[in-house]
Image (cartoon, rainbow, N blue to C red; front, side):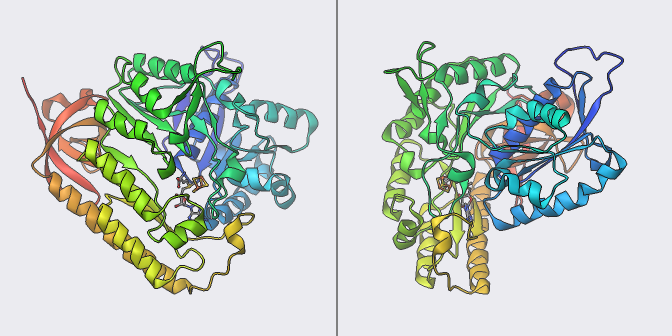
Length: 473
Ligand code: SAM
Ligand code: F3S
């Protein structure tokens, strides 16, 4: 995160009003990254003198922690970080400290009890109320806690997206109603709520006008999207038609300027045939899919309450590859779920080879208070779990490198994201399967940023590719 300046909604900055500084720290998933960006935009719009982001908490007027409680360490880290900024209030008594995200949602007022210097506690569904919470904090002199789930209000109250790059995230649904036995998300983010269909299309059309070429549709279970269609029924009138993700993608395909469509994260149970068929009809839908499987053993999948077997998962992949043979698949895995035996783990390793995943996020199971799995007996020793995780990660890394090597010699359109981190004379682009490729830009230089260019891949490093630009007349 670099320092950046965000103008106030009022346009020109009135001379008398001081600019404010915001320090924000984000933990966890892409949804949280997205929410943090929205917090910045909302506070900027509500700060008459303007707002600058800062990397230095000691110079901030507002400090926000956007927390995650999916795994243990992120949760502990929040209280640790709060302890580190506590004393800044002695230097600046006006300083406001806020805690948002899933830990806030779960702990609520308990955060203020444990850390009484915290001024605002808000959940993922009430982040748009930040300006009101700050105003009430100032008026009342008391910490404010709002972790309610006001359906859809959040989407309606967001300021228009600021465009900084050719690629943008668009949140299309919130929450999760799957209740996997290990996961806190349904409790912290609430049940699935989809944004109205036309609202999503309007936002994407506006982004395209501002130069966005690639959109990533975001949701905790994005393929469970069911958006009400039609302006009249937009707030859920009786009998209103509902669009699924497949329909939404076909409409986005028609928006001029949008050249690539991604979505994340999806659930295997929601990979309908209609959505699979869209891969056959919409080339703009990338040949990359993140489809968390979690495990390869049916016994563990059932205990996790995932709602599918390994065979059913493989059947989804087979049908997807029938319409998109070059589909790159990534996944999430949990190792060491309560009761997992060496045999169960073997089944996960077998599944990884059968599907040939091209990358994964993998985690050791962490018991989350309040979830059903937290009550299960867990007798696998921690070192055994770590060994299983290392084995899994090593295999995934090998497969990733195999895929990268297989790309050498191929030419692909890549979206140029910026100057390469490795060399200032090179550009960095992103491939369809989410790899960074560094290549010499020659005389064309930085004006290619935000454009698609053809790049031939020449070398595969463990985490990136090298290539050369192919210029066709
Ligand atoms: N919606 C996604 C899905 O369909 O699985 C998952 C979203 S979840 C926030 C992100 C990932 O965190 C999960 O896929 C899972 O692998 C991991 N995760 C969730 N709860 C966990 C826990 N209690 N222990 C370890 N990893 C966990
Ligand atoms: Fe969590 Fe399962 Fe939903 S992993 S986010 S409860 S699909």
